[in-house]
Length: 115
Image (cartoon, rainbow, N blue to C red; front, side):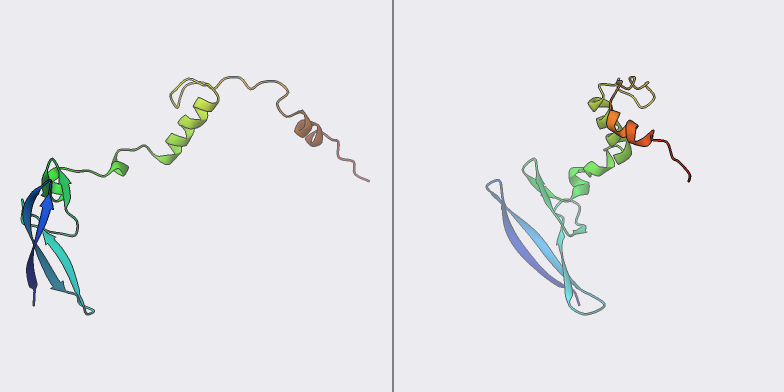
């Protein structure tokens, strides 16, 4: 059995009536969904954009994560900026400065003696 009720919401000073549909779950209880005022689809979230209340599809909203680069490429670009290297993954890296780690080099270069 599906339960329906209507809720009146105030969006930017005007009232909008939105239907709430409760559907039974297979393990007991019920799940409430909003009915989108524009497309009449059942949605778990509605959004206000341009003084209208509607779902993501009607507002043509997208997820930011679909448009960001792969984390490895983002990290590589950040390291290149720290090294003052030219942008681009295939651009050559600058030469390494001399005497960066003299202490580390000395400890690694110690001779190993077998007795």
